[in-house]
Image (cartoon, rainbow, N blue to C red; front, side):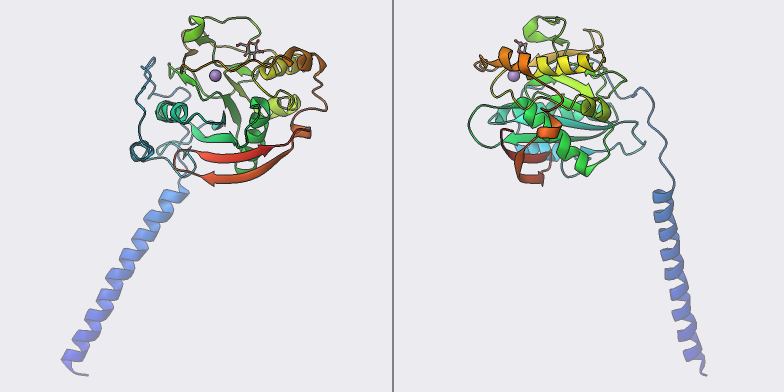
Length: 302
Ligand code: BGC
Ligand code: MN
């Protein structure tokens, strides 16, 4: 063998060694990143700052998306440096409130991220005209969210409520929780003791045990009062944090015409036969948008 040949063979094998070693090291790094579990996030997030002014500017979808670099498709977020203690589904009933939705998302994403939550935002859109059914859309959100992830906590949230204080934890406790205790339009005071509307948090088992919301409330009002009754019937009590923490701004809008039959429906409501177990709808679209998971449906009265 000539010296030249030997030289070429040695150089080529050397090259293979170097490249092979490189691949090996990279693979090792890669595996190490994926195998070493992240530590749990602290019980109380060090990233929260307290009361923050509402950001009212209505941004374009594009600029909101550009600001949310850490968000995964479908409006799903997980903290990068620690494993969240809570897997939270935010369920938001929706129809024809584009400006509200943009203000909501632009405020709520940074808010939830400061709490180091593993969360996903679900926008449940009622497609057809006709009276809005908030309770039914909540039930659909719960049902569809459970299909895609093992959430520990469900937050049922109006699109026109903006939480002001990020010390208000968007997680669940052993009792169903009422979040929107102090809303600006009610002078930051609880309007009445049994109010259970606006924003609430329930664990999956709590929500299942009351059979979810009633599907019978078409139009404004009553479905939240009915959920309150359901929770009471199941001997659960409602938990609230202080008014200082549970502060909200409501986005101004014309009040919907209240459903005059709501008191009658409330009286006749039977949680055993009306709720998650009698839910009927047509799923038109479920799609991972950049800032949320869209669930668009046609409601079918039971
Ligand atoms: C309605 C509820 C509503 C509450 C506060 C009640 O009369 O039935 O749906 O949340 O008023 O506005
Ligand atoms: Mn409203």
